[in-house]
Amino acid sequence: MFLWESIAFGPIHSRRLGRSLGINVSPTKDKICSFNCVYCECGWTVNTEIRPEYFPPAPLILEAIEAKLQDCKTKDIDIDSLTFSGNGEPTLHPEFGKIMDGLLVLRDQYYPNSLITCLSNSTQLYRQDVREVLMKIENPVMKLDASSEQVFQLIDRPTVPVALAEIIEWLTQFNGQLIIQTLLFKGKVDGVAFNNSSGIELQLLVDHIVKINPRHVMLYSLDRETPAKSLIKLPKEELEKVADVIRSKGIAVKVY
Ligand code: SF4
Image (cartoon, rainbow, N blue to C red; front, side):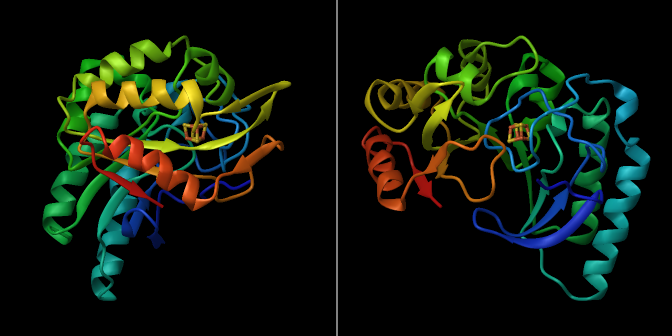
């Protein structure tokens, strides 16, 4: 499995975001997340303790980002997106708001045409301060993989007490100013078979998306090695079928 070894990395070519400069505010030697997704490219969430001292301090993070931006500028490298992603859930960082405010200044200084993206698992949206920080940026990309509580607990495996219904409620508070990212796949976990792209599961998923009414939905399937071994990637045609169902409700969808 894979961990990013630096705070600022890339830019890498992202299927979804173009030239994306990655920002990892989690530790570089460990994954810290409030989910333990069966497909996580960082591997299983081994350490379920989430302590403030595990995270690099905001000034160190901003220093690393500025050095990277200066380097890219000097080399005339284009950047489309400054993207919070990395070894875990970025909104768990105790100084997430401070980091975002610093990044907004750096973006305007070095790459004013780039967008700020945060890939988040939505678990910290119960906090108003986290919601407000995410509402300051162009691309809050929020995870919604599951349709029913059972599938949510099976595939996203939260390590903090949270229910799918709560996450959906918090996502509606963005008043549509967000992007939903949904990983569609099937397989068997703990002896239980699931498929979040068909039947009642698909019906429920579409209902949630209609309620949240996002700017658009990103659909994709597995791309890299996964910690759980009995997972099956869906072909693009299957993703397109799901996309058509969501589009029929008047919501834009991009398939990757
Ligand atoms: S939310 Fe992201 S980082 Fe956390 S376990 Fe899931 S895929 Fe991995």
